[in-house]
Length: 318
Ligand code: OXD
Image (cartoon, rainbow, N blue to C red):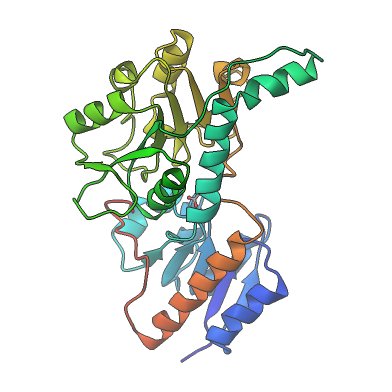
């Protein structure tokens, strides 16, 4: 077989290169940035990139490309018509996000529950004033979308004494979920109405775009908090702003937005009951180690012609 050229759109440490080489010593690894990537497309066989990176123009310049691997779980910028109609393999990094994302969600839930968002604001103004605090214990968490991330959140929430509800397309037996709901609209409304904390952990698809709008927000408890660590477009952002302004819900912890970076003009920035993080929920020093390990495993499968893991359905989008 001719040497395989793997173009990687991210800096790699030596240990990452070694992991890939251990899987397949003969491959040629080309690490690129935004400026250099295009020139390597004519010789590229495997492209390792991010689901949020503009890739269509690169694809059009890559006649030998056989496989795109997303270092992210989301593949939103990798689902353009040319790839959907071609044999090009698309895989993602689903399954490696559970630990950091669940810790991020827990951090935001605890921050609201213990009033840390308000304490930090007071601290900046040197104000000593007792603020209302609460416990997660015996409160109810609803997880919309129970995949690898949702399960890890459920496990940690149970350890804190919470009741866990979750919605999912197929009914399965779940160790850390007290009640599982099907994913139809009525079931979702029923689940939302029970919850003190709601976490969105779904992929963005045609079906999930704008899934959470005023109707869903209106059935939530006025004391409830909403968290989004999935994709911004799953929430109708204008409806969320209305719900927060009208106090239909108490607050929101948001790591993802319909437009990123979140525009300076967004009213969300100035809301005291909103915690904004810049799409970092999955990131930690361990992220790339896990992502490259998964890629290297798939590389062996690709070369040996075995079934690959995390194949993305290019029509469904996950
Ligand atoms: C991802 C993310 O898609 O971190 O991997 O958002």
